[in-house]
Amino acid sequence: MRGTQRSNPATRILTTLIALLALQLGSLVAPAYACGCGAMIPDSSERIGVDREESAVRWDGRTETVVMRFNVHGNARRAAWIMPVPSRAEVDLGDPALFDALESLTAPEERDRYYFWPREGDWPFDTSYGDGAGAAAPGAAPGVGVVGRERLGPFDVARLTATDPDALGDWLHANGFELPERLPGALRPYVDRKWEYVAVRLAPQEEGASLSGKLSPLRITFASPELVYPMRLSRLARTPQTLGLYVLADHRMEPRSPIGGDRPEVTFAGRIGGDENAALARLTGGAPVHLTALEQKFPHPDRIDDDHHLRTVADTPYREVVYNDRLLTIGGDVPAWLVTVGGGALLATAATLLAVRASRRRSHPTPGVRSTA
Image (cartoon, rainbow, N blue to C red; front, side, top):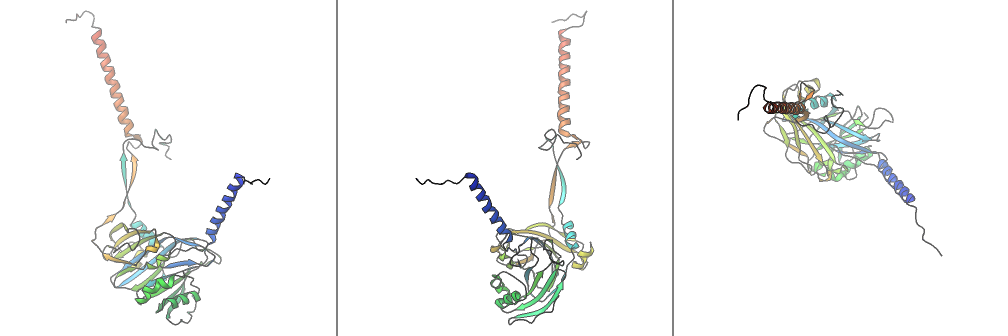
């Protein structure tokens, strides 16, 4: 008689774990990309992700300068992205100190907020309370013009024009700029408007090193009659995106619409001196400007349907406030609730003792004194 063989429960669990491990390893070696202001993708066998795209944008009504910095992770040794621009662009390296200065200027204001009754972590709920503890530019293909190509630090930069998105995609592929297959279709609106392009290959300066951490900023300058921040190509991203944008202009400026992402959040708005440090002065020319800091999340990048077009709004100052909740104390050490409760207890005890003493006096009259009814 032939019986049915049952698998051992331990065997089933082991098989499941192996399958999960194989799936996880596959996700690590599979190509993945995230988009910044343009589209980014590594070499075919490598992986890269952009945790955050951070840009400072200076606009004086005629000229726009974008200083971009990416925070990346993965094992990619090379990657590429492309940024459309409305006119001929000049490209050079940015100053990393600029973002340190902007982060300091827009940091939230910290305020202390006191509470009376102890919470979790306070004594007596926490016994530890009080412890004190460049290469030569190749010839252009039909439909593509090469304005220039240069090496800037870890960047191989090509400035291009194009009248055909497919020809632009072919040129990028032929010249080592590996970008998403869907890119030509996404470029069509820019080609129709006769925009130009800054294509960038990122490569570590040390042989064999991978791209990780905060990359060197790249500074891109072009003429523009409006303040526009290119975002449409970010719809090619496969992972949620976060945008941090510092806008420096004559007035407070905000996006006209969320363009498919969450509502942009203003974390700072106010007038600043443009010469507070060298990095900021190089961007503003030393003139006072209005600084607006914006944060925006794109949970579904494929819904991005436009670039950010920013408009002037009322110059209402704003600064985010972060409250530090602290237990109210007296003299810096003694909880106020303990003094209040202890003092109340002492008063109640004293009142009780006085009442008892008075009662005893009434019960035991002084000798020689007769009590009358």
